[in-house]
Length: 436
Image 1 (cartoon, rainbow, N blue to C red):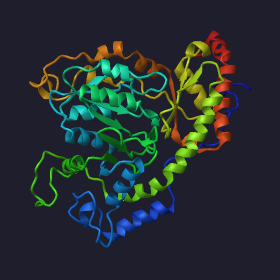
Image 2 (image 1 turned 60 degrees about the vertical axis):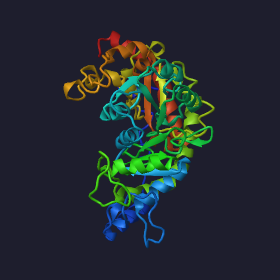
Image 3 (image 1 turned 90 degrees about the vertical axis):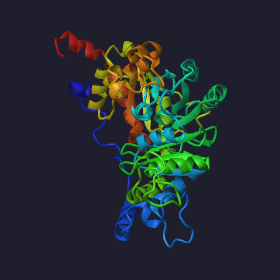
Image 4 (image 1 turned 180 degrees about the horizontal axis):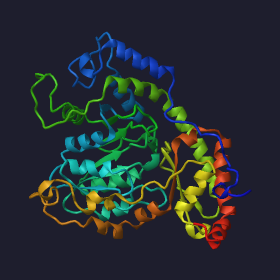
């Protein structure tokens, strides 16, 4: 296969993969229309707190139009657009009554917002290990983590693969727990034919720049209970209530509103997501089959209940004992062959300095709160979350934009990995020669 690029050989690939974000004239026209309208926020179209804008309106709020369309797309009754995905989790927890003294079970292998949103509600995140085959939270491990203080579970549909919602629904019912779906990676994803974000008490989505649908930033809460949707809207609108005076505030809320510019972009992005996800899935299936043929490479599994996988990240596990090189050496070599990649999270959430030092709030809250007042050694979760530890050591991530290419592009990925495997002895020879 020729010399490795990292050692001076010709790379497998010298042309770029598809770029992200994907946009065209439709986004440009949508943005210009909002700009020229002079109506840059949803309040311009009415009170702003109703779940549907007035039907007799001459024009629609782009945010209202988008949140209704996206909720339908995911199979939920109501959508509440907000500033970003972190805000979506934060507001959903608040609206569901999570607060001081409550424990919320979360996975340790995900973006920190899943846990930090719990802390922002003065509640306590408790970590439960993942399934090493899917990187989603393990239902048995989540159930083992339940204590008398547990009030909720946040499942993350990691990388776009549905969590085992049947098992989590049973656990939640058995222990009378709130179930929230963090679907930041899962636009268009489904579990047994049901849209993700429509199964638990609430779902949350992100439209941050890296996501499969993006407006640079943005978030959305999906719910099917009208009273809960109204409460989410109120918290997001500084605690206002519908049909009450504008400067009358009924709850301690935030200003987490989505702008009309974000709504306009996301309406256009929603038109593409199904076709893009189909392309991602076709290419992911091809990579799964071809990469599994290479000794020491193990693509993540797709369970039968994950009936629609949005493939926000394509992940495979790397076995350094087979290759005889470290994961970091492999990543550097793969990049040199022209394949953009990363190792994902360097460590699970509980190893972040914020958790190790418990630097959350003054006076030790929420752990030292009179409603809780327990001691937690977050470093000790390394003992109960060995799979999360392994995932941080073994994972190789490819961005979803790569999956928007052609089959020939996927074959370049396979050829690059195979080349490194076939020439793995070159690393040992290089070390023996005194090169670092």
